[in-house]
Amino acid sequence: MNKFMIFSVHKIIILGFLLVLLSIFLLGCHKTEILLQPTDNSTEQNNQEKEPVSLSTDITTGKIGIEGGDVEVRDSKSPIFGAKVRIAENTVSAETEISIHPVTDFPKGPEPGCKVAGNGVRITSDDFIKTSRSPMALFIPFPRTDDENSLNLMFAYNMSSEEWVEDSFSSISPLPSPSPEIYVGTIYQIDNNVIYFPVICDMAEMLSE
Image (cartoon, rainbow, N blue to C red; front, side, top):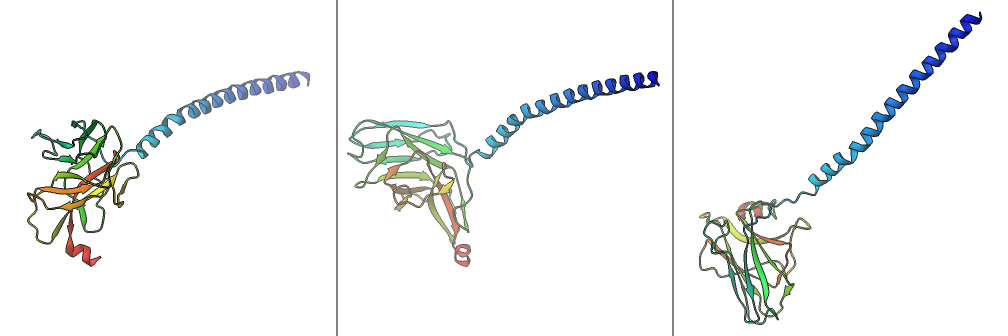
């Protein structure tokens, strides 16, 4: 009876020891899983924050003083060759750096029946520029189309809010163009977050909506 009891006690101790080892092993695995979790979450978060448009490093930069002037993309290899911003006299009070950036990835069209038809143009400055007197003129390349039922427009897109812009200062108002392949319009401020995209709208499809 005593031997049986001793054997049973030893058996219980061994089983207890094995349970302790198993618990330590499982705890170690659990800790490893917890340590790996933040890495997976950060990757998923980065993917969610990815912008719908990609910005190019092919940038044209110029300086505009109180006398005004133009900054123009003259590199024929640029995807926005011919893009230009014209700033009137007294728009800026000191020499200001103006840059023109091509945007080659497009968001979804602003309205049913409308689609982005070409590369976007982003205008930036090292100082906030806003005018209520003489608007700034933008010259933006526009893909040629011979469809009589289409309407060629230029829309402003805010890359921070990921929305099409409707305010009167950032949106672009059309002017007579010297060529069907150049869209000319005016803006009253330079917003570094805004991109201007050429948009072609199917009038029949718009009217059917």
